[in-house]
Image 1 (cartoon, rainbow, N blue to C red):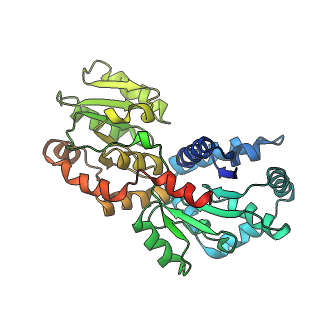
Image 2: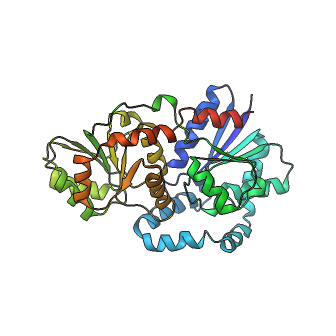
Length: 355
């Protein structure tokens, strides 16, 4: 029996989505897995700092986009990162060290970049008796914070070949330890469509402006051939606002919570900001995505992935979106989904992880 420590962070949803799938599969193969969330890790003190940093981060990058973009780029600078990572946190490091020493994992996999700092200092303080893995939740132009402690990481997993190429180029990486696996998803979650007929559209309101949402819905309310499912997805105030205007529109449905995992096979197209998890879920299910907005940094790179891999498109004009829904033959995306997704993604990761 192998023991695996999975290190994640509850910032948005992609990190935990990957961690939970890996945990479930590891346990199903009669191994032991523990998931350690950096938010919970920081919460274990009187300041409750984990929840504070989570709320601050999500509000900051969503509401103050220009300031966040500048901050994101500053932290992509090597000198700044080395300064931040040079600061020591004895209490938190001691907690991590004690946890690892008690659990004694055979493998440690991080799906959230700040954990590499703790891995590095543990290895410097103790004898390394486990393999170290990183599953990178950026695409295309990977933030260099993932790579800062490269000397302490044995292998990297990336989502696709575009990202692997950029990884090697950006970091001038010359080791043969970067593995393309796609996103770890349950096999039963995948579907292969023979044809894409747009009938049911999921519109996720996260990071969308009031003006854009109202204008788009004003156009789509006349499309009786379409069912528009509108979910608040961390934008509850906007959902409440738009539902007042359109609650009587027959082809509109409003959801405070929409379970994508359970219902995605009933969706034909998604309009959303390009979160890492939602993009991968769309690819796995042959669902085109229209990206009308993005958060600078990671999501901007995810937008580039959507365009480069041709699995959807970026469009902010409401009339053009409506035109696309009427006249684009979305079947053209099917070969691109097939080229990118991998139903064996979790097997690829675990075959390496549990070896």
